[in-house]
Image 1 (tube, rainbow, N blue to C red):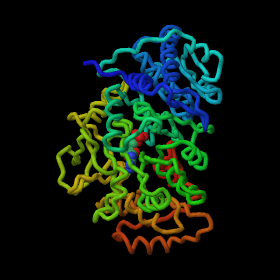
Image 2 (cartoon, helix red, strand yellow; image 1 turned 120 degrees about the horizontal axis):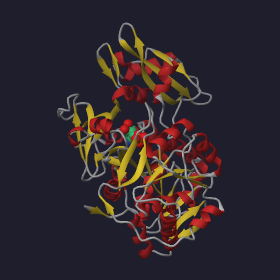
Image 3 (tube, rainbow, N blue to C red; image 1 turned 45 degrees about the horizontal axis):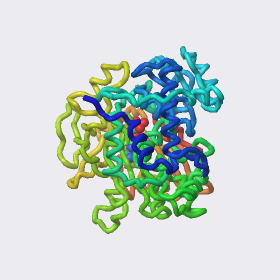
Image 4 (cartoon, rainbow, N blue to C red; image 1 turned 135 degrees about the horizontal axis):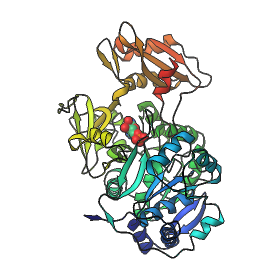
Length: 505
Ligand code: AMP
């Protein structure tokens, strides 16, 4: 079966809104939609005719967020190639693995990152810096007609952030990403032509996916001058454009809220979409106090990107609802057309309210892992994506996540969900961040251990935190030990590395 090539989303916007801004660097618009589409058609021509890539070929992108990111992604799709966006902060060893796994022989890397690519020892035919004359030369190629796509064609090889084990290459097809794009409109937010998205989160991960609905709707992609996340810069940019959206991991939302408390929320801000990790209710309330009801949440994973469940702005705003508090602690409702069920350890269906693994079925679910049929079969067994996340569905169909199954602490035979304990610790005004893990315990199997980062100048003792836990949760869930840290170890997308904390014990 043929499916529409994702590049057609851009071509459609270029016909409908040729003069609307498509790409901006800082406050400066670089290309309108007609200009962007023309660059993409030419780049696609160069990828095929000058760099010799054949349909299905892989193109590695090792860059911070940049205007070139936008056109290169679309050029790959336009030419029927698979883009391999690689996190700019990876270690050369991890890069080496990805190059070998994908067999990519063409790589676009900015000057500051090409040393890392060289250190990875990849067997590349072309390593091109988008800021050079060589790249400008590619834009002089003859335009290529858009490639036809079948439903199995890979658009994006998405390397999972690897909080455990080696990274896996998630194969996302044109069809997967088209479903994801439509779900943004049906369940997350509407986008008007002329709106904007500020790409402050990595485009190799979350923010790059958000490019799709925004291009489909004719909104402008705004790249911060810094090429990454700086709370003051991001807020300033959202003030400079109208109808601005930003995708932010929960840690970024926290920093945006702290900054907005000092200098106000920008008027042009339309939506902050958060997700990618747990948002604690205390942090959400603080963000809602400054940004009002301009927050929406998504829950997804590389294997079903951005598209498992969503908590819309309207649900955030429905403060009078008797279950508002529980809804804020949830990840919302399964998105339209995607099925979610909760399963026990033999994949049996569990009843409403029971905690089990979250399984997902729908058009956004990946085709499998590259070069790993065993892991693909295991993760997709029975036709359902096994997310590795634990959660429960309530009577209204809202999904609440507990933890990753591997993070659950089993102490004296009882399950303890770290997230629940972390929520309590974060309710202390002096606690900035908290992470709870299971430490080996000769008597209980595992015992609860908390790592805590306090706010500057705050005096917080173990006794204070113990008293707080005693007041709010069952005794057996209280941390037996505390360790105070200056900061929590995090990966490049801001997720706390519990594996790292375990190593420190
Ligand atoms: P990744 O594949 O790197 O995007 O990581 C996906 C994982 O992040 C999911 O399996 C969840 O464990 C976690 N995650 C994503 N979105 C949320 C959310 N809204 N709330 C809690 N955890 C989330």
